[in-house]
Image (cartoon, rainbow, N blue to C red; front, side, top):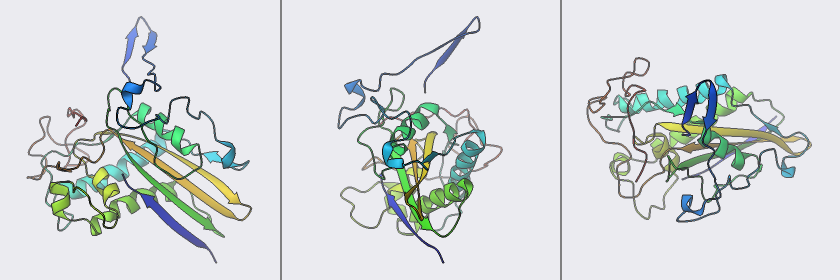
Length: 261
């Protein structure tokens, strides 16, 4: 017999190539200008390896091409369902971009996940994403085995499932002073001003017989009070670069999205 519980809590570096010499811009995450509202930045002198709290069995799930593709496909399939007008009672989205992986957002998410402590960080911004958002999830279990794919899939779907307690008035205008059941993970996935995400996940054993996983995803733009989560309209009608071949309700991957308030 097994038991498990879920907890959820709401809320690009440019590379120049010259004569085969790679010069990449390394951001200084300790620059206080990145966190004007609240700090510190999680990646300022952040963890580059697992914290002691993770224990000897702690493991960072590799965000290899396979896991990146899984996370992106889960997000984009859900966004496509919503954008296409197939998520009753929500309206279709006029210009919902296809999300793509961002290494800097993923690296910063890892600095949070490597603590093996479930919680939002105070700041995860970059120069390109001055108001980055974050979804986190945690699951504990014993007497069972879960694959990384199962855990990642469960977490992203749990976030999106908040559509059941949210409603179209919240996606038309993100509420001020909202105090009901969590909706912020769903609205983060549904944001049409986010086209870049990066995630991290760890698994560890809090006790000899129990297991825990924590997943952190960072998004190009957070939920913004008083602004639309997405602009409603005929699917893809507002996309300047046409529709995605893979996700016909979404804009093509060449759509330019400004992830700033």
